[in-house]
Image (cartoon, rainbow, N blue to C red; front, side, top):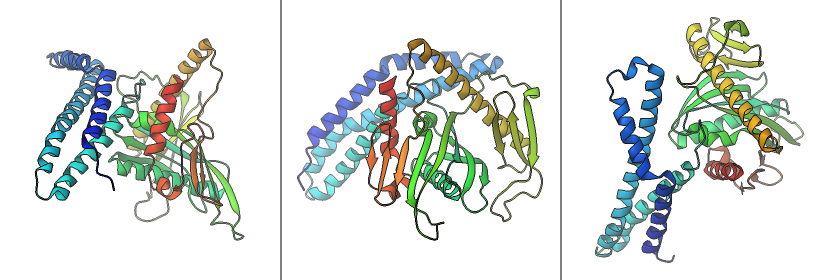
Length: 368
């Protein structure tokens, strides 16, 4: 294997970081953080909780980005010194292992940060609510929906994102009819919103005694979590609230009381459920938060549709039929919007989605 050209690699990484600093306008960001810090130190800040929430959230995000860039810059500046010291060591192979590790880690961190600079949407930095529903395909589709749920949970585990399952409706034979879970991490919505759409699976069905090839579909919906500063008016008269006993595969974790809550928003037809808490009051509060998030997303899409109409954009939604997963007769996962594809479906289904998500974010930015 050829020796690495550390000077060249460090130079390229440095150029990428400088580009990110320019895009983020780091000096301006530092000024903004200082101004927000002054606003946050005002004694009567919390007299207006909504305004205070906005200020403290903006300050936290700005400081997080500044600290991250400063940390990366410091580590990058130390790398040439590490290379020089390693070259002077008697055991160069062992010494350069640390250099290789640090350079590889920095390259990945900077690439991730570069993608994050593309997430400039109004709600991109928020937590996400993901709903997965089985669609055409019967028991195959229900099983496919559960496979997708596992895929996203594994993706979150890889990135240390917190996942809270709010509701799961199990299918009779196998799999799930639907599930909703919250993903908590900075920019969770911005990253995962590109996963919205219809996911298609082609495989030899384990439920077919004749081992025939089947095609099934599952839909993924991603919405941003509402914050205190959002204004979503919901009239109680527009709601139908039903309580029921939690469903599940059995065991001690299944409730024996009617604590699960289903809320139907009559004007929009949106239905949300929550069964993860043992208290009906807690389940209702969580379901209301999910409903607010979905109504917020609907409002955002309506506003975007109006702007698209003014601009003459008739391209329609990009969400449908967004990705195909083929397990037989060949192995491939392909995104139909970006043309990004891999030949390792098992890795993708185990949560290796970074390539697809980064391609999706860049594709979306190119369309704006």
